[in-house]
Length: 174
Image 1 (tube, one colour):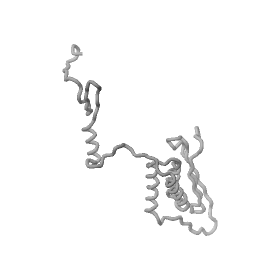
Image 2 (spheres, helix red, strand yellow):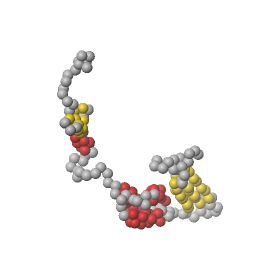
Image 3 (cartoon, one colour):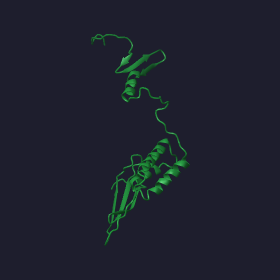
Image 4 (spheres, one colour):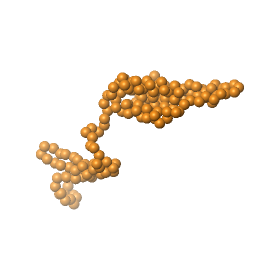
């Protein structure tokens, strides 16, 4: 290549596009120490306690998790505002992990901040009209490609029944 192109031999490769290259007889090592330091600085975590693993996800006490989720499910009888969230965490009651436990605790923290929320049914003089709505997404669950269906029923202006259900089969067309 020297005959065709003007080149300089700088020796073995040691640095390329921010990647440190260490070549030894036993193998080659690639490292990005300086760039990693800049990422930590960018996040403002220079003095943080280092973690030994990139992600924590261990199984948690399934009995306690089921107790909490079951209690939340009962609470949705008067609190439809978080029924979807409770339905979602209910999917993972068989083998819950720390990630699922965090989601349940997030819902409980929401409940703690909205203790006085309630359902109010005003009196409807005369004839109250019964109205129902339903909708579903098409393969909305990215993990299983199953669809979610939602149902709402009103008596006058009052919500009296609601449901969110993951469909049992995968719909190939609508």
